[in-house]
Image 1 (cartoon, rainbow, N blue to C red):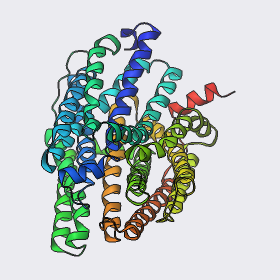
Image 2: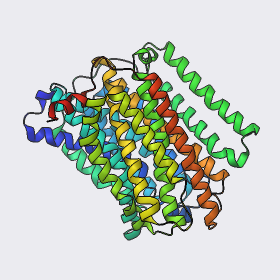
Image 3: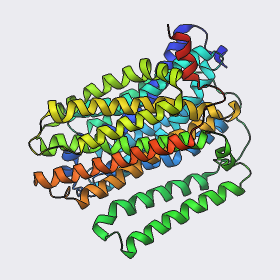
Image 4: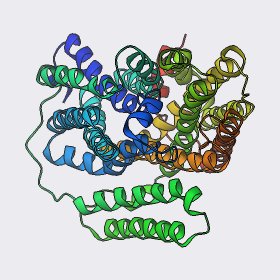
Length: 479
């Protein structure tokens, strides 16, 4: 399929659009972080429910990713890539214009649905464009992989700039010109779709898994207020479990399911997806609560708060593109995954010692860099292992699974840590010792998740029978 894009210039443009897509869909998870205090004040969010500005996006994103991948298979990757950007544009307009909590969450949900169409189509287009050359594919995947955490960290900085010097709705409006530019360039750069394939689309499965995740996150977020032992909490969790069990049942009985359950028998695929889920469940709460610590405890305004985390972006990009592939090639994906998660856990434990009278140079900068290093070292080998473990004809499904794992981990991790923080005082606005104690408990909880991820990766990951493509590229370029 790469013949449909002649010339290196168009290939570079294609890679730019694909990496930009990954950057933006992940940036949209984090760009709201610095704006949250303003949004809470203007729209009337309670401290416990503020995380839904994040969760409304990642739940629809993660829950609909498999459906998005199936739609790309049936209707064509380029067509769904374009459609996703249009849906993201519409959701961004609604979120930016929202005047109350309900419309804000609706807009964020529509944004997530657009991202769920964009992400699997982008990875499919990457494979079509660069799949004929292992060396080109390795380099493209390294850049694609780096775009995700870079987008997450850069979103914090951009959110600070926009919130400080413009206004919080522009953290959503920024997507509109980007979407218009991408849609205008798609036909020039990306491979054309073939004829539509015949096949059913499991819409019910996509709705079941999304509803189950949403109900589970809602139960966890509500638990500190309703009580962990209350009928409401356990009844809601039971409802979530029932929806997810029904999703598994539907997948086992459909001729053309969203997710072939037997794919998890492939060595390393389930283990790599679990590692991605736990990595996200530790990483996302870290930047969420670190940003709140900067603003609500240290008193940073929006722009300095975003700028304070900018060094993480630089280190993430360097580690993802230069360091992680080479280290993975030398020591193997299992060693790097375990090491990265252990480093991230250590950084989170260090963060748990944050102080009411702390400062950026001692309490934030060194530990944020350490966390970025650990996350980056674990992200690349788990991504490469998850994709390369599946047979080539199921690369799209494997890509959708690993994206889903990351987003589900993000939502569940943040919901759980939000509950921990609330139970330990993070709801007492203006009470700096209570806020600090709450944030500290969230960092400890995230550290436990990272350590659990390291332990499970050490037990479940095996030496691959064939190296992930990112390792091949690193081997080819290493002196």
